[in-house]
Length: 234
Image (cartoon, rainbow, N blue to C red):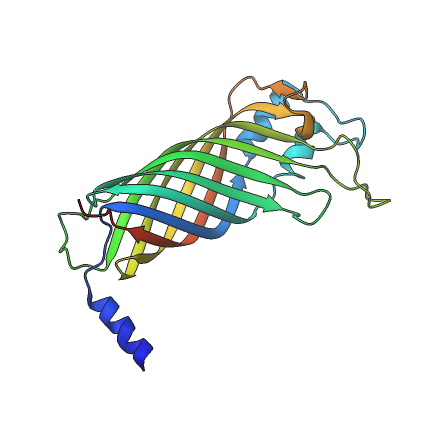
């Protein structure tokens, strides 16, 4: 009973985005849109991998860029409830416990705009923000298995890196001023600049600069929990 009363008291208080530091953890699902990137690689002529016999385009795009779960961590500062700036890291891992494990990391800076501030009553317990950011993306895997022996084939780890622009929005509910729960659909528009013929040796001659045009998109939807810390009084 006491927990119900406490929840009601928290819910009755005004709560929405305000001045101060916030930390957000989120998780959800992400999916790649790879057709333009595949065409770009094919036009450049990546050839075949001599170990697996697979085309280098297929080896990366079809074998080491799977859809699936994503996780993120964001640290930011909100200015007067109107705008916020944050650093963020989003991870898309796969085959974590296998010797063919791999994934993608998207890291950078983003800005948020809260359009409801000053327009909707201050006692609201919800908020909406639009987010855009500029990031660096690094993606790659440790390779694939031989279908006959089920052992990892050497020299089959492929990947890429480049820049990414983030676009999305977040809708949040505030059961209390210090915590909020949200949902965020977002899109990353990526421009890969290098293809790794050897992910582990990408900075030691194992990378091919990419030419031409043809980007890559990554769509994600996540659920989040944010903790809000007001600045200390003077």
